[in-house]
Amino acid sequence: MLPSYYGIPFAILLVLGGTLSCFAGYRLFRFVLAIYGFILGAMVASSMMGANSTGAMVIAAIVGGLAGALVLTLAYFVGIALLGAGLGALVVAPVLWQAFGTGDPPAIAVILLAVAGSIGAMLLQRYVIIITTAFGGAWTLLVGLLAMTGDRGATRAAVSGDVWILYPTTAPGQRWIPIVWFVLGLIGTAVQLGITGKKTD
Image 1 (cartoon, helix red, strand yellow):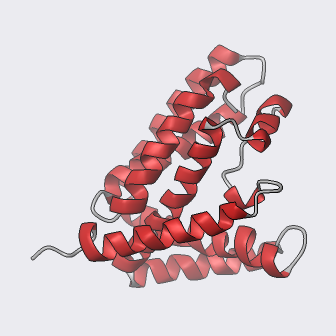
Image 2: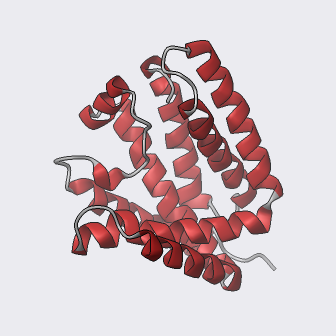
């Protein structure tokens, strides 16, 4: 994880990327893939470095981010399948399982929904891209806003050295976050279906 004083620039990247993804994800899909590839690559690479190696951590985040952006941009169809798989896993982990179960969801349920989401994404590409980018963008936008406003949960995670998991639904004592996320996702879906994601003749 990057040091806390790099939090605001990274949060701004999350807010901008989340906004683009939420409201224009289908039209700018390759660009959105590059943004998410960069974010994921930076998170993975920086989390593998020691907490005291600030310079190495920043370099690893940049290199990992560029590699992630390149991989997802070049792997267009793989990116669609991965988005579908991510949406399938997202339905289980932070939403359904927290609503109907306790603890972590069983691995087999996450795997099965990820596979189902991946297959569905390839069959219904346009709609899956719109829904996934809308809800994924809303999710990313919320996390960025929480980080920018100094959310206590995010601050505690930074101080403890934990890897920052991008789940708005895990913020303790903030039950409004899943509701805002869901509403933002619906608005983003409607905007893309009605305006930015329309098919051009």
